[in-house]
Each structure stands twice: as structure tokens, then as C-alpha cells.
Length: 428
Image 1 (cartoon, rainbow, N blue to C red):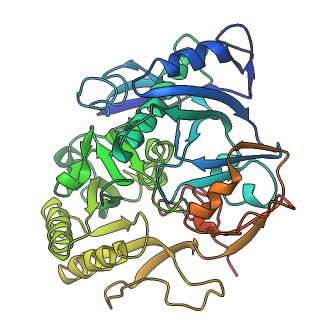
Image 2 (image 1 turned 45 degrees about the horizontal axis):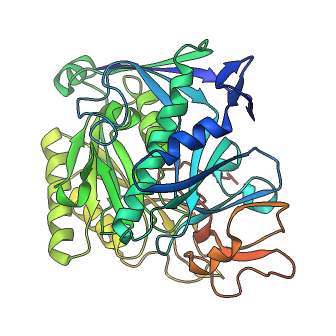
């Protein structure tokens, strides 16, 4: 399979009387875009704003972040979700590089997040560095919670596709090419390189805690093998509002850090065999089944090493360490990527479960770390929503000062367990 990522570099986004790209500036006709969004199913009103790096703007409550792009060769769109299903991972797409669509609006339930474009909050989220097209959505009256979530999710994806079409005729600044044959072909080419599989755990626990693979609710699936290029091409979509700190947004699936790093090393340091999508279920039987099948798939693929990344924390910690246990007992080395829920002082047990086989662990930070976010000059959304976000509480927002005190839990992407965040390893 061969996939090209063609970057149309965008240095600024402005409103104007037309849609277009010139001299790395994306111009958006605000009224036309709002009219398009309001024409989507179950969307009552849409208000579009811009938020740029360094501006004293707070965005809350964030539901999803999506990268605008257009497929110019191969199956278009988010196959099985916004377009007819078909095999992804081949062809070429052009992307508005540096731009993100951010959806906000009436809170569906608990656990949606914050993006600050400046100050202390900006240090913790990767989306303080993107040029954000913020879409504030009001859905039709009378929708049930799952209908509300679906309407907002699809509106964000379709808005990203709408803007992505502007990249189609724009000059391309850089091209990244990813190419991998079948497992048999790649193993024949690199017989002496360590065989590595990536297992990506996905929140799949019901309303506001779901993920989708080719449009299929992943909690209905057994662990599923994907070619790594399929996820990069839009095969995996976020449908959850899990704690914002480690929610994997659709943008992060489109740019999965672990997959991109393993692709760089493929054929040089490792033989990257594929990516296993692992549903995180809530029943003990479901956890055993998911962990058993994950280890079996890795063994059948001939993996010698497996990287396992988590999404969320709490009961998924059990899945994470049980996968490590099963892999290690089969003679397969396991490396885990997870954040920690260690309390405000960092002294609590970091994971809800543990196994002696979970020896190699990469931490992406403490979700309970408390930060104080200064008053914003502009707020897109509703700051009082922090009371209903994981990491916030009643009184978290001080109306008198405009400050918010909260845990990293509330900040989108602050402890991303696929490594897509602003934290770095420090060597001593």
C-alpha cells in the first residue's frame, strides 16, 4: 500500500467574502460556512469563530478536533461515516497543514475539554499551536443524548471535509510518502529486523465513550488488525468525551504519533507488522475476551515486540496490564504507554491495576496535576461548563477573577497516551 500526504501549508486564517487560499493564507466566508453547517441533519444553529496561537482565547467545552483534508486519489472522506465505505490507506490526500476544526456547544454530558490559545493552558495542549476554526453548535430540540452526540460528531467531520476541499487546487508545499507491502513481503525484505506490532486501545464503553472504525461502533468488534496507513487515512474516528486529557481526538487519529514514528523506523530498525485496534469494554468477560484476542493476534502475526497504548484511565488500566501479562507469557516483549492518575501530590498509585509483566512503561504525565488558567479576553463557549468536566468541580471557575483552577484532566490532549501532546522526556 502507498499513501501520500500532500501538505498545503497555512500560516494564517481570516474571514472574507470568499473561500480560498493565497500566499499561505486561508480565507473563509463565515456566512457560507455557517449556512452549510446549519443545513446538516439535526443542527439548529452554527457560529464559526477563529482562534489563533498566542491569542488570549479560551475554547470550552471542546468535543472534537479534526484535520481538514481532501482525498485526491483513492477512497474519499471518512469511509463508512461521511462517505460510502471502501478500503483506505492508499492513494493521496491534500491537507490544510496547521489548521484544525474544533467543535463546541451545549454539553452532551460529562467529560468534554478546554483549549487555551495562550498562557499556562497553552503549554499543555497541542491544539494551542494550530489555527483553529471553532464551530459552536446548537442541535435541534428534543434530541436524545446519543442523537445529540452523533449530530455534533458528524457536523465536525463534514465541516473538516468542506474546508478540506479548498486544499484540492492549492499549491503543495511538501509531500510525505508512506509505502508498505504485505506482512509476507515486508518480512521477506527485512528478515533480520525485530518484528513489531502496535496495539491501540480505544474507548468503547457506550454513550460518550465510543470510537468508530470504518463507521462501525468498535465495542461491537473483536480486536481488529488494520494496515497502519488506514488509520492515518481516516479509518478511525473519535466519538467519545472521555476525560479530555487523554481523549484521542479524530485529529490525533489522523496523525497518530506512534504509527508515524514506527513508519519512520520500518525497514531501518524494525519490521512494522501492523496495528491492532483493541476495544476497551466494561464487563470482566469483555475484558478477558479482548485481551485474549489481542495477544493471540500478535502471536499469530509473529510479533517479537508490541507497543500498547491506552485511551482513558481507571478500568482500562486493567485491560492494559492484562495485555502485557498475556504477551510476556507468550515470550513477546510488551511496552506500555499510559498516563497516571496519581493525585494532586503525585503520591497515589498511578494505575488502577498492576501486573509484574507490566515492566516497560512510558508515562505521559499525571492527569491529576492542578493548573490555574488566567482570565481570557475572549471565551468561545461557556466557562461555567468546567464544573461538569472531568478535572473540574463546582467553583472551579471563579467568576470574579475569570480564572479557572482545574486538573490536567480537563485540558484536551494534555496527557495523550499516543504521545500527541506537549510533554517531553527530560534526560538527567
